[in-house]
Length: 632
Ligand code: PRX
Image (cartoon, rainbow, N blue to C red; front, side, top):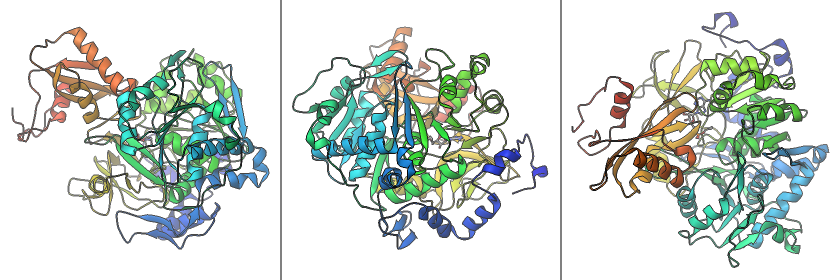
């Protein structure tokens, strides 16, 4: 690490107190060890967990880029999330604390209780005929049952496919269809800012086009009347009372490389891709990163304010914390309902020590001023984190000063659905620069390269690539291994293409700039231009459409669309509004465009590809760059 005094720019050094209690005593020594002995480093992390049978080989790279980790090892991630803790004092430790959106309900689960809930759910899933390797779609809001459902699938070796409950019918249907799930787990509805969202009705609509689904388990959350198909739908509380639900359920012994879950994410072209993660490597990666980066200890109260429906929730609400035997807090609601102090009230009420959220939320809360957080005692906090998009230095400083009282280091963790775990990230012992994720995690090296794959000089922008395999890496795109190779490993063979652009400064710190493919990052959520465009052209008035991302004060990036209308349809304000609504209904309210503009022509290459970069340059009043391929 460069000498403290030599770092360039605005630098925040960790306090002696933070350094003294960190798991990492000597960052440079661990980094050096992992550099020299990648497999040794990861084997030591894996050794801190329990295996039914130890691996023969840490890393098998004989069939690149289809890497395998802990080959020959037998394990189940649930054994390490739950079973292992039941043999120790941690069986009485709280695994999960939950509060409802309206603040009137509180539920807590010890590791012992967690085992009971997960076992019950696992028995029920099994009784529906679900077997090892079968896919189960989970469509639930932030309630404890989403955690039970994920762990229950993993326990019996089924592969979960969680679909964020903010997604609408088409998005849900496409994901169920692609995964060929036999079972869907949902609830009657969810609470969002005091309103009820009818999840079960969305499922009913989606299932009209999903013949693979045999059964639907419905959890009662909001108490609304919902249609029940007597042959297909089953109330969870009714099933729970049956004897079959209440016996023991052994945790299935899995190969380290057996699939744990798939999670859909947007790519540059076509439909969302099913990213596949496995039991062994993913377990080791999420365990070790959470331990080192957020420095979790037994007396911590960890709050990852993401949704379990995204990878952040998978890795750092569900699996990572439980692998570490931590106490997690989960909140059903959002940060500003009914008032913008809602999160800070929870921090105070539950004595949260480590808090992890997204820059968009911080920017949103900043707008309401300091008085809201200042109403609360936030002195329990010792570490903060962000994820999902670049954090602007102004938001970083606000978070640091107003929430962390200038005491709490901020872990700006860069990673992806595909990476499964933090990849470029600070740890509590390194000096921070607002807006930089600092350097790669142990065992990783990143590079910023030009079109030809040559490293660019420090300070210049280029494509961000990763040089080494890591245990929580995606193994493939489920059902489409060719796309896996093409998407991530073909542009620069031997190196993983992240899809992001970045700069490295002369201290070796990385600064993520943003996506360089046709992915728009709205409030930390990935949306493909192709998905938005295909939703638009599914409307009878639209012949062709293009979507681009433009800077947005709170969301980071907002979606802006250009539509060419079919004959017989005229541009109007009301049609623009209807189209915005149409996209929200088909994909998700997150995908609602900021603007829809009507055009006579879209800039295209001679081969017919829409040149979104030209639209973007025009919208920003910037030079259009190389337009030699433009057909106009
Ligand atoms: O562009 C990067 C951005 O989010 C993308 C990954 O999105 P997703 O797979 O949905 O996972 C989000 C949560 C892990 C990345 O390619 N991104 C994520 N974290 C950061 C970030 N950009 C800048 N800084 C970050 N800390």
